[in-house]
Amino acid sequence: MSADKHLQSWQERFEMAEAMQPLLGKLYRNQGVEVMIYGKPLLNASTIEIIKAHRLVRRHVGEKLRLRESFPFVQALSKLAVKQCRVDIGKLAVNYWRDHTDVSEIESYMAKELADAIDHADDVAPRDVVLYGFGRIGRLLARLLIERTGRSNKLRLRAIVLRGGKKGDLEKRASLLRRDSVHGPFNGSVEVDEDNNAIIANGTYIQVIYANSPDEVDYTKYDISDALIVDNTGIWKDEAGLGLHLKSPGASKVLLTAPAKGAIKNIVYGVNEGDITAEDIIVSAASCTTNAITPVLKAVNDKYGIENGHVETIHSYTNDQNLIDNYHTADRRGRSAPLNMVITETGAAKAVAKALPELAGKLTGNAIRVPTPNVSMAIISMNLNAETSKDELNEYLKDTALQSPLQNQIDYTDSTEIVSSDLVGSRYAGVVDSQATIAEGKRAILYVWYDNEFGYSCQVVGVMQTMLGLTTLSLPA
Image (cartoon, rainbow, N blue to C red; front, side, top):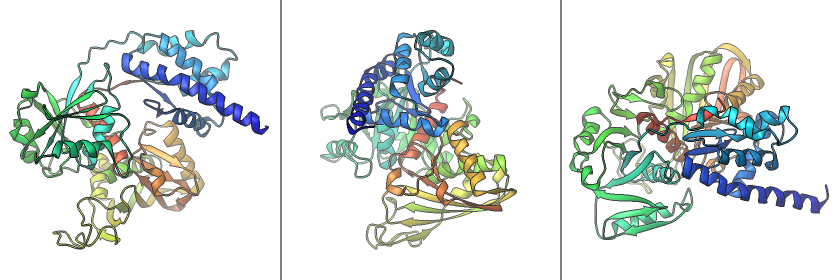
């Protein structure tokens, strides 16, 4: 292909992706339809992101999906009265073009494949969400909730609760939402309403409330009711402490974004969210590391069985550590985080058993904090019940990442060049680095990357939706 033809081909793809954008936006804003390409969401995607999503199809089916092949499906979808669902046009297009050669039957094909979502009853009322704490996880959750803003959105961010309230605090909180040293600028507009103590982000009105204790707030004063309180502070971890939230008028359920103590259910979305019942009013979304390793461990245990194992976490430093050497109650964490590797403990390996009881007592774990601000790695060393090889294990995990019920939790890479910064913004709980896999006989070692901030936050949103009964129909099945 000549240089001019390469450029012409790129121009055609770019224009097609641009034409898709308004259709994708209207489908979500007006009908609650989220469009995907083999599991990769196109909500708010840029033209380049739409093109890249199409390129990834080759990983799934071994062949290209061209934008000119998928665009008619987006057009057909926009004409159907589908509501409140996720539609994977990548899968629909690939399946269609295997048996057809023209576009004449696409609309009838789509109507048949999406029959369950056509005129789907939209009788689920929107639910209020309050973020109690607005640190690293709180602000990322805000971004994720705000990107879903629209008439059909059922998960509505109504308020954030903070300690403090000093002069200038509101603008500083808004500034931290606008700009992030790791995750980049906020995708949209952030305004401050000083008179009403609120932040307005992409049209989402967020009441800012100041309180020193979870039981001090009357949410009904702000027209907030039956709300899910997402506690991002990590201060209260047991039923007694988290139960304080429920004493506040307008609060009905609590989700902790950290491992819980006692009998509170620790949920890893994609693995055991089915354990959540309507009666569960306090739930934990476990830790970032537990979310990263549990789906992979489940996949391996389902096929090979795990006799025992050890998880070593190479974790980016966190706000709990000191920037320079200073007093800290925990061992070693007082030493400068940006200058040292710091051995510390983690309960993530033992916490796996709360989501996967079959692995109770089989795993040990430890952690090393390292001088990077985000993205971590879990090195999982296992003794299996059945023999395998590197190629066989990798092929199984690749298939799991692409085709299984865990495809939204596990990603897979065969790149020989990938490093931690490449995974910033990953929406997966964990990413298997196949090039580092070691397997021989009944011994296996897996290297799993994870964005311990953003990937974890995506998992938390899944738990939020489950707690509020906001499950979404996904098609094709």
